Image (cartoon, rainbow, N blue to C red; front, side, top):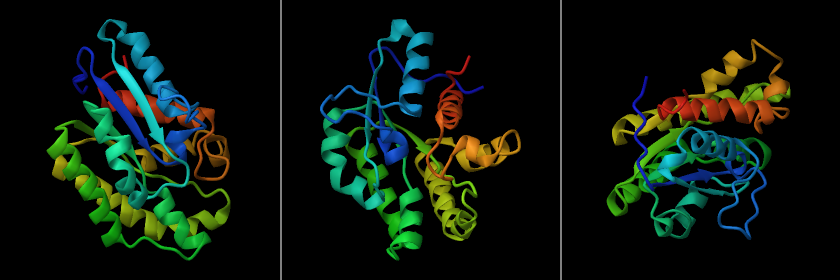
Length: 212
């Protein structure tokens, strides 16, 4: 099992798109939304109350990698986190299919790498990369696999390159869909149900060595 690396008084940032956002109140800097970020932070705090770790959520619905690049100073660097957990990529796939506005694999990799390089250079923060997933609800989501799998490969390669902890969701949700219908975990194939968010939180805690 992974060693739990988060130390006394550290700051953990969750950042990404709508799955991280999960309806957070933008007027409150400490609001965690109602999804996996809240669940992971709550479970962590319950297990390690003595550490006094601070969690932030800076997910914004609809974001792609290029959007994170544009707001990285304010929503990451300025918060001075010790750990940065990034969950991005599904909108880089989705916009190709619903708006004919694709993000090439090269653009995705370049933007993502720039985030990681800047984070290591300016903060030397620990990194957690969460891969995007999709389930076939509705059936047309199956068309996304070609694009999604290329972007998942980018995230995996960057995790190795930067020594990040890695949360492998695509396989996790494929396995979950053998236990209950895919729509139980993500009603539109993308946005998790409460049970889906709980699975993500459990996976995040496990990767961080904080699941027991």
